Amino acid sequence: MNKQSRNEGMTVQEAGRKGGEARAEKYSPEELSQQAKKASDTIEKKQPGFHAEIGQKGGKNSHRRQQKQ
Image (tube, rainbow, N blue to C red; front, side, top):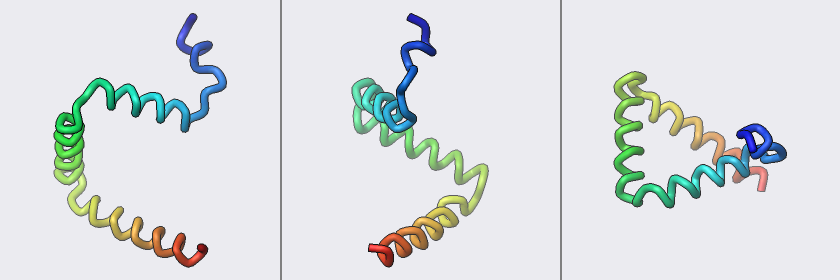
């Protein structure tokens, strides 16, 4: 069975869930935390202020969602 036929009919959401489950089995919570911290530090070096910018956007989106409910 090749890769393409194995993944036919799988949605992006299903593929993401499957990948997340595989990572959770492979790495401990501490290892995942270290990887996330390293990625965050790298992004901050390459794009200073990026996290603050997306945090502001996230807050705006959350506010809109609350108003709709």
